[in-house]
Length: 116
Image 1 (cartoon, rainbow, N blue to C red):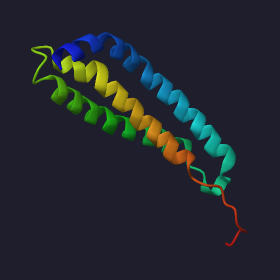
Image 2 (cartoon, rainbow, N blue to C red; image 1 turned 120 degrees about the horizontal axis):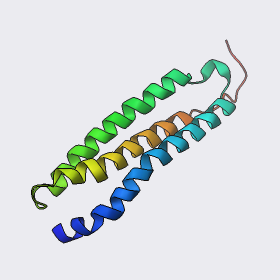
Image 3 (tube, rainbow, N blue to C red; image 1 turned 120 degrees about the vertical axis):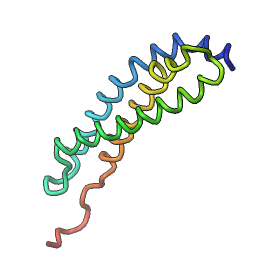
Image 4 (cartoon, helix red, strand yellow; image 1 turned 135 degrees about the vertical axis):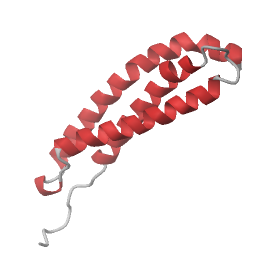
């Protein structure tokens, strides 16, 4: 497992560098889709969306960091913590942001008559 992790550090670090940017762009596209589909009374506010992205990204990044350190540290030696910081934390951060965007975009538009 050590040899596999050592060989994957560079390519996965490149992927981990790009993934948060791609996730933020995808979440913004999904939020724009949500704003077009859902009537104004039921829309998520921009501030709420940004807070959801920050919270979900922070939680995902923390879990990714802990998972990466736990995965690499028993075997990789004294620089094992870098695997968590450079690879798994950014990927899980991006996954948290993307899942927040998907959850917000899944709010369905009202289909029935307005019953206020």
